[in-house]
Length: 135
Length: 81
Image (cartoon, rainbow over all chains, first blue to last red; front, side, top):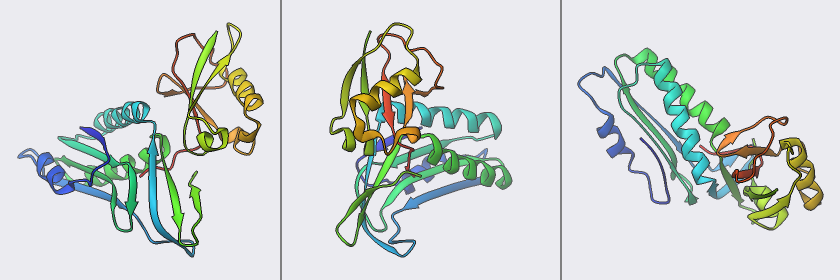
């Protein structure tokens, strides 16, 4: 299941939903709003998206991960809009039979998400300036 | 053909619009569209080669030929997560 939301992410509910009797491992990755980046202070982040394409790309990511690893249940949720320090921007939760494939799949999912899903963050720096992040 | 282009993030800010229409000849490629877009919005120049083009929610190569009715989007490298 993939989802974009403007509400706080209920990652605990995600974790519960992906739990399974077939699973020996459940993995959760949370991305959170960090205060310091290379010595500069962030007050908040604003996330914008191209929602239609973001969903297509997230579904493709899920499909690729399922081809490579024996994922049982999977939920990826990304939050959009204004996020404060410590807020959760992304939650990736899934279950698999064994831990090794879970860690591999988790690394792949967050790395690829950051490369292909059309979502952008704008920094609100402590000096009052705003700046789009383009990695 | 007339194509509607959606713009996002810094591309939207620099062009000062979230969408625009471009008139392109039949058989125009993604590279032609990029050139036409930069001519229409010279302020996109600082992003130029970093601008990504998507057609119908997929990333496309420069040589791909555009079709009327396609949903085209233009944006800088993504930074979600």
